[in-house]
Length: 107
Figure 1 (cartoon, rainbow, N blue to C red):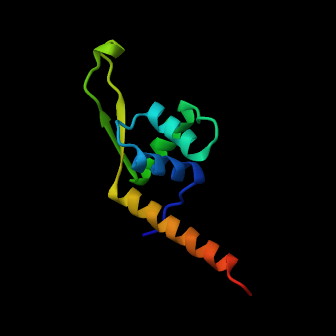
Figure 2 (figure 1 turned 60 degrees about the vertical axis):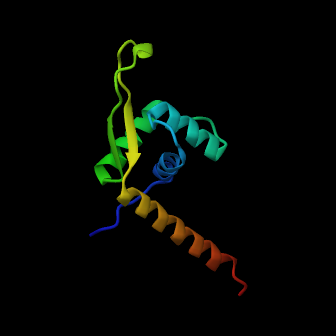
């Protein structure tokens, strides 16, 4: 099985999904990424596009919340990281840690 490429932004989204203890919908995910990175919150369009890619790769699943009267009866799309997504993120972080350790080792 070929290893799926994971972009930096996709990695940030997966980290946000792991760290958020509330409903993971696009606005919360965007705000969590901003908090984690110290940068401006990514646009919702960018978040939705990347979440669609992560879903196609099998790293994320989604479903709908219950209708919310505060939202005029509309539902939210809730995202969850899959076991494959968590394992891929962990493997990437281990590879990065080993590379950084190798680069910092004295010659």
